[in-house]
Length: 82
Image (tube, rainbow, N blue to C red; front, side, top):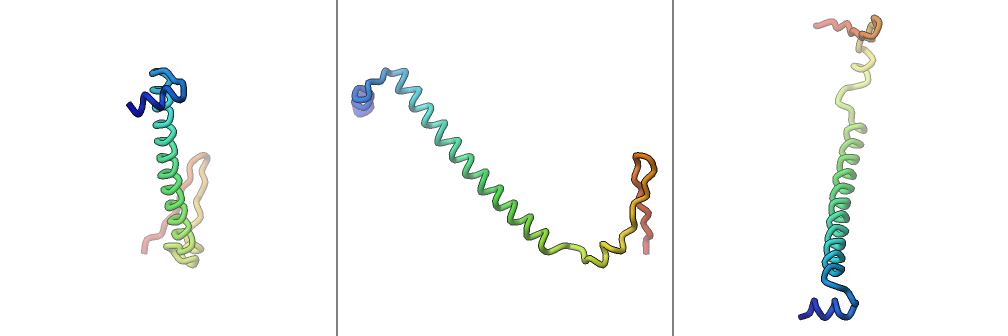
């Protein structure tokens, strides 16, 4: 009876009330998914920042890497193995 009283008080038909409930459910689910997505994106951004602040290779090794040789559209890298 409580739902019928709310419907009567607001002047809604059964269809209007059902559509309002569905709309609210969609709104809440979109807000929840958006919150989860933004939180995951923020965590990934923080992890990426941590990776960028502590490089895996030293700058000396990066400086000693061979430059690629460009032949037309191909890019070849000459690597000398120890």
